[in-house]
Image 1 (cartoon, one colour):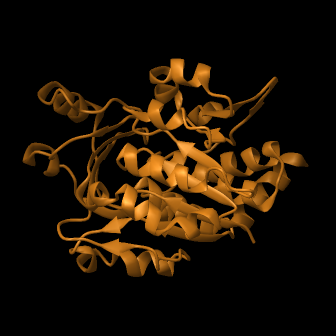
Image 2: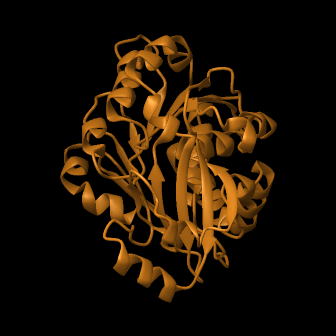
Length: 315
């Protein structure tokens, strides 16, 4: 069983399933409103948007990826911060029930991270995040948990924390005789180039929008680039080797977090020592299956479901 550590964000997701026309109206009214498939940082979400958010789930890219790694049968743990309101949403308790080790989480004053997510009729999502407790994850926190970070087989990082905290986590695993494989999800794309330039990052998993925003940084990156293309599958650039993995055909309900499911499964497989192609195949199937249900953590498929689809595709 591979040891996967996710150093990242924990949010309470407030979700609205609304029409494209309503989304267009919100975008016209709010210049910060995210494009389809985009995640943006905001200081607050106005009531005009909150009124459309009628469902609540647990999320955050760090938490989602840890849950996905656990579903992929990794020994998964999560490092990050929750607010003093976490009992209201049973954040830590639910993560533990979903198979994630939570002993490294710290509680801070103030609210847990907040995400506003709107989803249209096709399942496409638009996400705005308010940092909350995620903004309290510091370089000092990373150093306090350095042993935990170094003990991983695969370390998952995202861009919903402050860059200085993520860079400190990378420093903790650098320069050691044995270090984890580092998988970095550069979302939101803003500011991700600074993390991508760190020598300890091995794999980066941008979607189409993030790849476009980070084109220069990706050109300079010396590791493996795994571009997720939604229903069009995945393109992998590993040095001189490039290959594509197709996505299974599904009827999507909610694409929110599909990239997180992909990253969690990818990390579990890479940590176990699987070859890159097989790891990407399983991660691609898991991500596709997750879009057929609402939410993210509640939609993560079990590993056997993923293996069954892979086997059917090979027959």
